[in-house]
Length: 414
Image 1: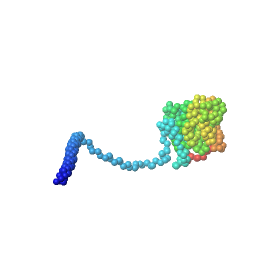
Image 2: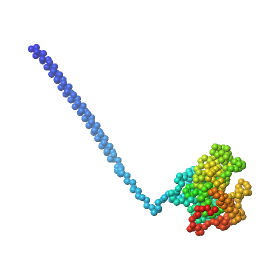
Image 3: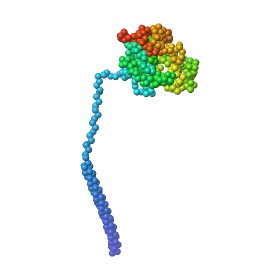
Image 4: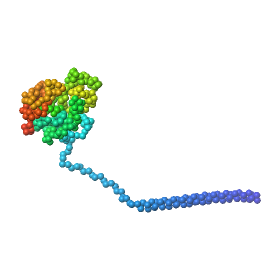
């Protein structure tokens, strides 16, 4: 009896625990179900709102005007090789200078372009070396008809460049060898450093033609003393440059030197000479490339210093003395004294006078020669008629109809 009473309370406790466990288990299911239903309701409302918004957006966009559909860009056109009736442009044609020498380059651009030179001495094409005749003038070349006779029949062996004051607006006939040969110029004054600038400008323009091998500076009052073949052969075969350079201890020589030119130029390097020069291509390139001595002359050789009488003689003496003849090829008469050489009028021009100028002797390539001066100055405009008349007899000018089947001799007739 006692045993049964004791077992009964234990069974009651066990049943009560089972009931509580099942209740808690059921309650967890109910909570999970309620939570799931709540999430489902919330998600369904959110989804409906998104669908409504999307439909409204589609409706709004459908109300706007439709843009045409984008299409891919057309393929680039296929480039076909150009068909030309002309032959291929080779190196020689590429380097061929233009028919006229006027251009739009400024001074700095011109000097830079002219200073360019090939490192390979041999030319990869047939090249006829030419002589560049550079006329530094105030106005027109008033002896042009005489020079026309001189150049006649020798096209392809020379180039012409004219530097006249910008104020001069004259022109030359189309058939003239001077037509279209005027280079861009600036004002030039006697004794001013801008005289050197004009010389460098002429050299730079002439250097643009790769065929120019020798460079001669002449004025409007210069005349040739020999025919073209003799002068051409003399210059092309020369082993020297012709820049007069000598040491003058007088006040008009060393007296023009300024100690401010140190350290680039010292007194013992200072030289004097005539303005009218002749040089080869190598020296011409060095002159237009000079950034050491030329600025010194621009700054310190002004007024009574007369830079055109000292710059090239001093520069050549310092840099290229061994290859310089130290003489000029242009004859002038200083016998009358004064700051300028003598001028010649019509009455001075005779056969005997010209023959006397042609018969002077000098050293040429280390040997004695009966050709010393190739040019002479200062001949006034009044001499033109007589020069044109007697030049064929005295100077033996060659005409094209006599030599159209003959090539130039490469040996100087001296």
